[in-house]
Image (tube, rainbow, N blue to C red; front, side, top):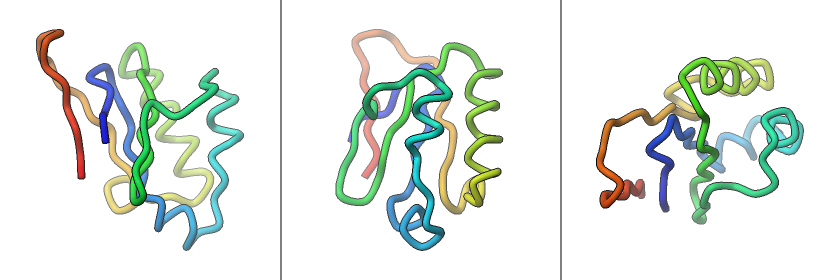
Length: 88
């Protein structure tokens, strides 16, 4: 599954199910119509333009009951345009 190089957030689907969390409010709050990408186990959200926006989304996810690192993480990397990043 692809992850945005610009402050992408990866969320575990199992955490959403276990904690009965719906991401639709977060998607609306940050003006996303669709996920950046998704797999059977993970959801990728982004890109976030700047660390402040990613941090604000992180706080929103925590307010919904998700735990940073255990349930989601922010991916931040300086990579060239010809490089893509994926998680499994």
